[in-house]
Every structure is written in C-alpha cells, then in structure tokens.
Length: 198
Image (cartoon, rainbow, N blue to C red; front, side, top):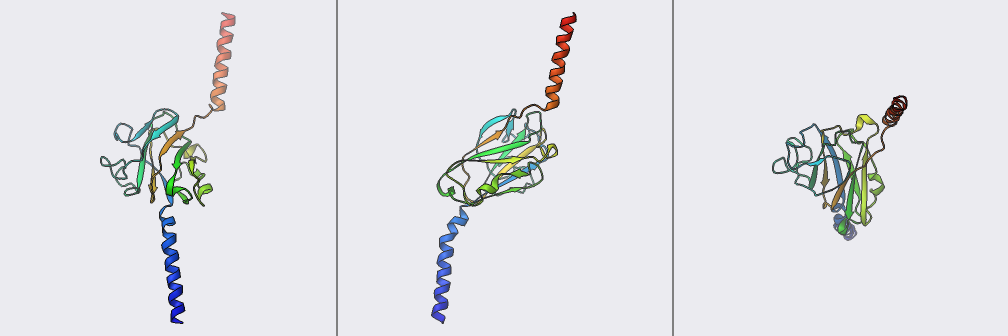
C-alpha cells in the first residue's frame, strides 16, 4: 500500500513538473486608466496626437522617472508596461494592441484585466485557450461615450508574467457622427443659397 501511495505521489510530482512551464508562459494583459498627468509632464509617455497606428515598445514597470508609472500605480513590478497619453483632442472609444506571438507564447493562455470601467469590453476571451502564432489583435472598446478615455487622460497596459511580445498600438479612425455630418451639410446648403442670391 505504501509503494502504491509513493507511486501516485511521484506521478503527481512529475505531472506538475511537466505542466509548470505552460503555466509560467501564460500572458496576462492589464489595462489601467489613471487621472491626467499631462503629456509633457512624463517624457516616457507615448503621446497620441492623432488616430492611427503607433509603433511602441514595452517600458519599465517602475515609478517615473525610473519607469513610466505614476506613484501608487497597481502595475508597479509587473513584467513590462506601456504608458500612453490621449493628446488627440477628443475622447478615445477604442484601443487595439497588436501583439507578435512567437516562441513560448504560441499556445499560451491569455487573460485580460481592466482596472476600471473605461474601455470595459475586450476580445481577450477568444484567446483564453491559447494564443496562435503570428499577429494577434486585442481590442478594448467602450460600451458608450461615458466609458471612453477622456482627452488628456493617461492610460497604461502591463504584462503580468511570461514575456512581453513585440507590440503596436492602434487608435482607429471613426466616422464623424450624424450630427457633425448634418451640420456640415446644412452649412454647405447655406453657403450655396447665399451665393445664388448674391
């Protein structure tokens, strides 16, 4: 009976030893908006001045100036971070991270965490069972305008555990709202009417 018990314990130990590298190679992404610090006050922030794709690099998860994070951030000590400032002049309703998945990250599970209700919807769950090789786009989207990232607000992404893959950050260009299009159309009609009677 003792021999059987030892064999079972040995088998469990071997399984844990073999399985542990897969647990260690999982990728966790944390999104953390914070109160505004301003784009010029932290030189390590990536300042978004317009919509589009930005080539960015992971940064040190330490308090500025040694790292990119503000004092008291919950991301201090994580594997890697990115600090971004919304200097576009408008709220941001969606941000995408494009990750280049290679090596030990292929097949690794992905988890995403959001530290408040900004951009509270993401597509991370589609990769929870394992990341495919190649470029993977993680999209964080607002449920309504009250969940957008406001103008001049800083926001951060962090990698928890594992390695930090190469990354690009995308802020999509959205079509103008119906009211903006209506206002432009009315202005054009008014200009055309004035010209005709002048």
